[in-house]
Amino acid sequence: MMKILLAFILILALFFIVVMVIDCNRFVIREYRCEDKRLKKPLKIVQLSDLHNKSFLLWQPLSRGIQI
Image (cartoon, one colour):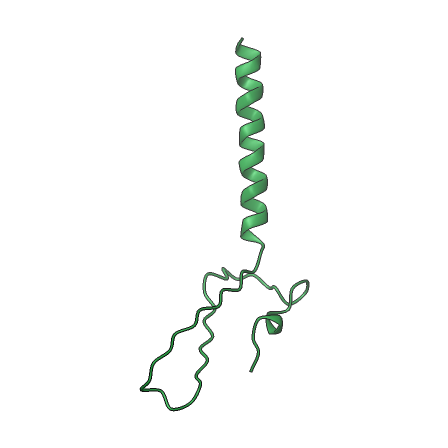
């Protein structure tokens, strides 16, 4: 019973480590639309956050999500 419990905990820990590594090395693009009649022309705002000294330019260009 102890070996089964230890194996389960090890598999669970391995799963969470893999999820953490994948999640920390991905670039997520979110798009929100907000309309306001006070704005006379379209406005785009780009916010980059939580990059934590990562470089995404080698495998996933930032320009893909930034369209001017």
